[in-house]
Image (cartoon, rainbow, N blue to C red):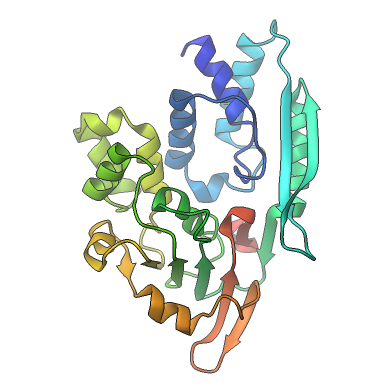
Length: 283
């Protein structure tokens, strides 16, 4: 791998702990796609929430071997919601030229962004803000951020008033429609057989991230995709209008909710703000 790729990977992948809460200023498509692919193949449930992981070790080795002569500095922010207003705010700013910067940001992110549940919910309802999430490419945070919390045989319901496409661009959208969220084994088989996937490792990683691997069911409720389109990529479909009546987001609270007809369920108003898990999946 070229030094520039290693440099870019090291900067854009400073933390896979909760990737949207620890940000960096430099990135490149090839490096981002490759790092996401490595993490996806290793396994999201073994990566997320862990500052030390195999991909991090690769990046550390590359940094020590190729970047020592560069005056390279990292700028990391930890972002979370204000408990009173609900608005996003910077909880920590870390600037440094060694791994201590990364480690300290990870430690704070665990405190700010990580929710450990005592009981795995059989039902999780996630709302995707219509102004922020327009595709499953972004909206599937609802899946991979909650997967370590949802019980085996459980049900994830995604309320997606702004989702009207799969990929953020036409090429990726077409690939998602063609191959679907069908689990790691099937995606890796398709990768071996199709050059178009070999040239789009970021899409391969995304397809893996968006599957429950058959462990729980996923019902998408988008405003801008049809039943046939949603089921065509491997999800279940339900009407957004009908599901919003069952789960009125303006009346729900983040965390456990109780409904006379639906029973107990766990609600998340914005999956981009954290990571949810149970202790037995985080040993």
